[in-house]
Length: 231
Image (cartoon, rainbow, N blue to C red):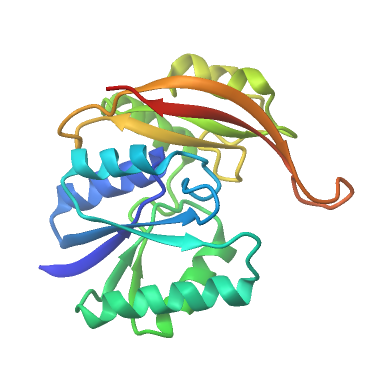
């Protein structure tokens, strides 16, 4: 069986991609790999606490590796940190790196180019799928997820801290991708067919975080919903 590591975001696309990989049985998933904020010890971009990420991995039954990313970090610093991490996997004979991306071609090429530098092949189990069909498959398989971050320029506060279900999908504006593939929203998966037990949590505060120059072309404001581990 081919040895691989899985780039785990903690969100729904990662969970569905992992489900498909495990179901097919072509790869032996040696590690989950997640980058986290060095300053806050939370999943990068998603804002989920490290303790909940660790519980996800425990429930999935796959060892977890994390890489702390300083803030701010230039692309040069980020690429160097990732190259060292990827090389460590290559040294352990993990020749494949698996992602949950769906249709962002530039991001796919970036990942392929960076991993080619350490002779690691990329795998995209749900690449090219229709995103409406993908999120419906996720729901119908019995996965449970909650939104933890939404782009304030695309969705308002009411969309953060909601479960991914039919009501959520139906409430999305027409300009928002059903999987949030353009970064409109990010999720935390807490149960499903590949989980041995649900990850318990309580919904904490909702916070609007802004950064950078509001005149820039990219979004600088996001609503975050804090999730707190519940024993």
